[in-house]
Image (cartoon, rainbow, N blue to C red; front, side):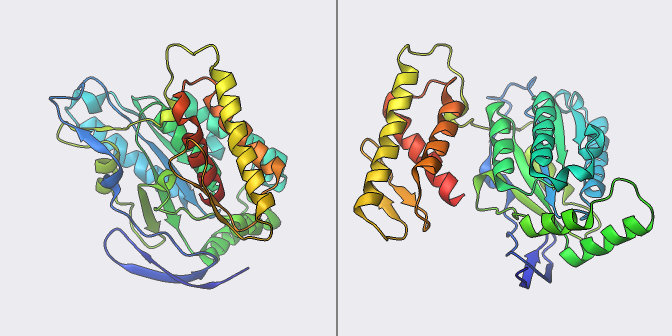
Amino acid sequence: MRCRSTSLLTGDGRQVSWGKSAEPSPLYKATENYTTASPACADQNVALMPLLTISGYPCAGKTYRSNQLRQYFESRISASTDPRICKIKVHHINDESLGVSRYVYHTARDEKDARAEEMSAIKRLLTRDNIVIADGLNYIKGFRYQLNCEAKAVQTPSCVIHIGVPADKCREHHKSRIDGGVENCYAEEDFENLIFRYEEPNGMARWDSPLFTVVYDDEAPPYEQIWEAMVGSDGQAKVVRPNAATVLKPATAQNYLYELDKATSDVVTQVVSWQKDHPGEDGGEIAITEATAPIQLPVTPLNLPQLQRIRRQFITMNRQHTLEKGRIKQLFVDYMNDSFHG
């Protein structure tokens, strides 16, 4: 496992260093990604409630931090006289609440089923009147991207809270749980595998932003910053603009699916043709007809099955939505770039 010294900036300005496998993400100003609606232009009867995605190594204390957040939110809600706030309910979802065994992480298929169960539970609760705390490993950036899309689809804010605990501290905690006879512990092999595969949140990625980092010796998460970024104060509700690809339209043109299939197929064909004409080139840009931005190819050459898989994913995401015909190629190019470099 690769190891180098890294440092982390906490909410109170302290810097903590340790050795681990990937550079930690910086702490970004949480309020930069959302606008606020003043009482004059916002519906005061509508609460835009957030999704808080907890992420961290196994045995990093994610559930402990989640319970701290839940207790803070419940206390603040009960003390509020704002009708927008009073009706909020807090939901805490994790493996225990879903009855998921830690042994699911031993096989890819069982783990995939467990993630699907978590996603379903979150989607059921993700409404404008609920705060949902998704307390889990959430170590795959693609899964965090899905959660971000689900939140945007219902126009509710979301953030990622990274529990930044060094791997050695997590190993100590894991060993103490096993020695103490705690049930439902990770198998040693699975524990190390999850640490190795962990994809640390990056505040530069829109699906990991806003990003809050809580290190192991912090007494509590930055409650006020999270509340302000996600819920808002002084009657100002957070306004989230959904992705263009997630906005449902009342009607679908008869030839929409045909145009969607045709446009995406044409983009894939142009990529394949470019690679045939430029053998041995690492990366590069491809100008796509009817698209304003180019495709940024990864260093590793792409084969047709990879491109077709990305194309099918894009079509599945957008078959129930009406995209403007002239924007399909550019949106597909953006989706491909996110897939290659996200």
